[in-house]
Length: 385
Image (cartoon, rainbow, N blue to C red; front, side, top):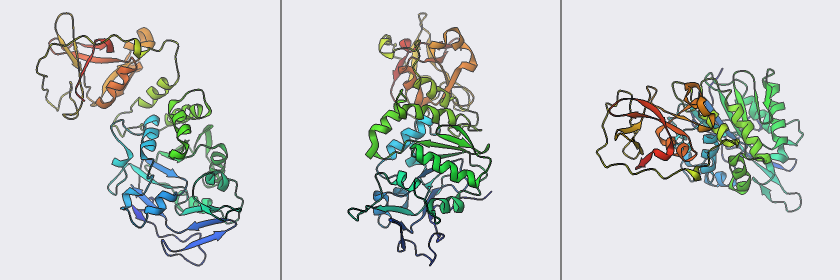
């Protein structure tokens, strides 16, 4: 076991026989250019490692002028945030902007080839860092394989806490090339499904690339429909379930990844949120203030929404917070089984409204009786947030 490179510039000249000076040395070979500018962000011993292929043109343009933390995934962080949320590896109220920092302890970011790679168009002579470059390099056959060199350097001995590696690009040729090369470093590696593989300790998952140049592919992946990208998304979500200690960095295993899968696979019994009745008006009254050290209804901040339901007897029900700090919701399509604890998902306060819009029921507690019941979204009023 070994740690990843520290946050910042990486001193590595493995692919440069004559040595290299960071940001100044390049190597041209067989129509390809390799520029020495390897970088790393985040934790050295993370739970999650996110790897692009190589720094694109926009990132390379910012290397010497922008703050280090603004360089990675510039221009498509919103897409990458959505991808990680869909996998259940990032809480709904978080974005990767919160995680790309030197003090980060659970996430690390970088690229499969830590230096930047460009392909020279044989017709125009112009070097490009985008387009079909990932596919092209995965087909490249050379005794001096830069991708394999970088894997050997940084992905042979993996950090002790590492559980998941996210690889951006789910092109079939790229997946196959990565699997072959990684299996040469980790012989026990086996395929989980079409987009993921594991050696029994670390799960490697390929997702759609976040570049806005392929926004239609990203949208199809996020939608999870019966398209090629939608099916790959479902396979990626399924693979995320193999994570040993669960997503969201919670002390107990979250079931959000299961919920995402359930939501993405249409069911004949699923609830159409457009058919839900408008919530009945709730009598105005000051919200109850509970001891923040005890379970109950507790928004995370003044900006968090509050969920209320007024029963026929006049008792006010509020969202019930459990001892793990999360809330419980159930899919009405489960019928009577929705009341079973095993069939309910645990979500953060920031995710409750989204599930209500999808027809999920919420566990709510009566302020007088302390009775906790599953309540339909048609009876719940959302205040603030």
